[in-house]
Length: 318
Ligand code: PEP
Ligand code: MN
Image 1 (cartoon, rainbow, N blue to C red):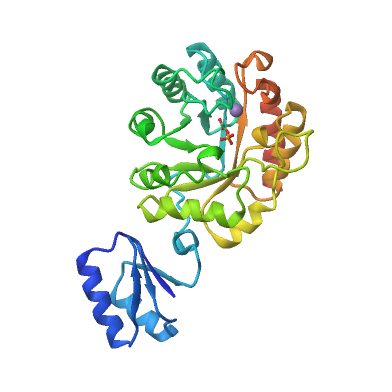
Image 2: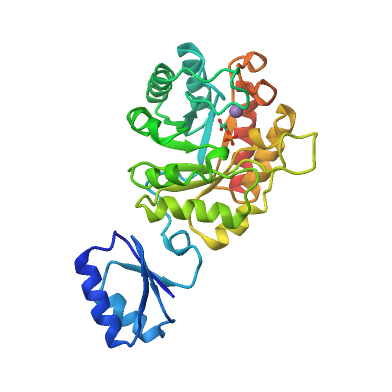
């Protein structure tokens, strides 16, 4: 059994817990930052007693993902339904301003855009860097939207901290453990995208890394996985929504854009994600979709995005 704490276990908590557990004839197998691993399961009466003595205890669990399974829903960090829209890459000030205005009018809650791009080829556009983050930040503020952008490595975290409200970790970095540990030390929500090769367990363990290092504001994002199919960019695995919701209270959003990679299929998949119970969406939108520097095939127009928003409002209200 594991005991989960709402804060880093300090020497005072450590001493009190050791003392109480020894009275209960229970041994400690391992200390982690927020979790204590015990050598056996404690009966309910003992759990109740410990909880009353130590208000720092969140839960007792047998789960392999003690924090993912125990952390209460953090309603303060994100809107009830997090709808993130914006271009794949930040390209210009005007592009971001136009996009922010259009998506805010359609009901989105956050503006996205990559300033540091994880491109398959080193010869493709790598992103505008800091000036891009400035465009994103200003456009988002002007329309009361949250700003979302990707950190490719630990080195970019301080810069992103200055300009964005939510940091995004790309699919390719899902198991970049030093990066996950560093994200645990920041005080901002983190969107963790599922690796295209990763099963649910690997995804949950990656989230557990961020939580264990102190940041409980993790938002999971399904963005499609590799399969034998070639007509879509990836295969959208919507079963993850109810499965993850049965295991954890962490919000899970869906990115249908990178999942299917072709613009005409995105609205149907966005509606399906909301019908499946997703806590939000991430959708790539561009003022001139065909002219997008990156991911042009999956970019939607403002009108297409507004029409998705109308249809998901009807589904969510149903
Ligand atoms: C993105 O959202 O900009 C992106 C690169 O997506 P992914 O990491 O899911 O490929
Ligand atoms: Mn993209």
